[in-house]
Length: 444
Image 1 (cartoon, one colour):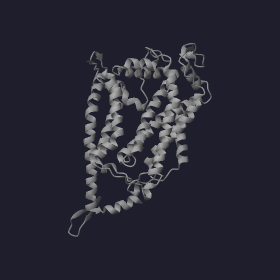
Image 2 (cartoon, helix red, strand yellow):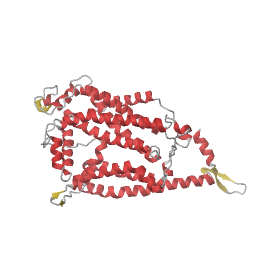
Image 3 (cartoon, rainbow, N blue to C red):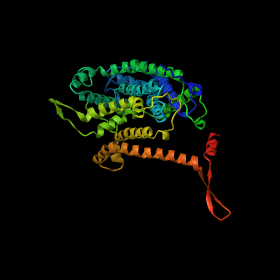
Image 4 (cartoon, rainbow, N blue to C red):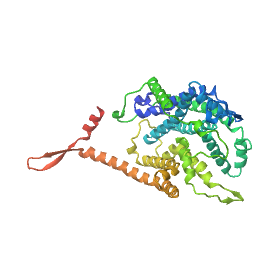
């Protein structure tokens, strides 16, 4: 058995490219979530018992609300610094999966998931899923109309599971919907198990980086000035504090307390759950019967099978690429996306698929704003999610091949400068600059 260890500069534990900052932003967002979440736990009451509202918000005074909603209102309007902490916490919960998604994209397009960093890739995929689940459980806690819509979606997804859906829904909601146990259960899951799991994965990721070192790009010209960890942490804190101060988010006093049977117009999920909402909106209403049991495919396929298949393929991609290419070697140098045309085209197809589902979650808004038929917009997305990824693959694959071909031609004939020279005989020709000159200029 041969042990491969990184050597030289490949074993560095510090990053020298701006794209490596995505991982730092994810870690710092998680730290901010822990700090602001710890503050909120002192004032939040995860109780679904109904009580008359006695807070300072006059339009709701005397209306029956849950203890969870009342305590969230008190945090927002009657606790010093409570609204700021709530909004910073919410913005950090949006930034965390965004930073993880950017980190996954950086690793995918540069080939940073290959040996010996396959486990690191799996860590980031797991962190992305956990960040989404943590965000959903946190969104349930205010018990407002938005969280009630999420509860309704969770109930529909649970009931769509063949054979055991009804029993599972009774277990989740305590026998009836919405019941009085789901928010307390989500609360303890949100503040204990999920943060502990994410903290463990971040620590594992840190240990893997120390063992394997950072990957690096081949060209020195891609390097950027290093930002210290302290400076990056303060910058992340500053941005989130500014967002929490100036950008209102989740004003539950406008939405009102959740009441089963009511709906909220214009409500959309957080960005990382948009693809799930879009998939449900454009899925045809199929409900076949198998062995006497109805299968609610209109919910089961978009809410469980499509995300499950997507994240399974995402996690298994390092092994799929190794199997298809036969490349099982150790890699410490990153690829340029253009040099891995197939991988880059596959990534573009995946982004297109995800993005179209995400855009489909606003099919009603698109129809209203552009004065289109909702039926036509829905059918457009039904066709686009099948055709769009294929077109993206073909276009990006050809672009990568064209860029590589152009570089090879420049290496042989030089780069076109746009400067015309006249020879003694009166003829004109373009001046070509050697490729080496351009590389030296970029390096400077």
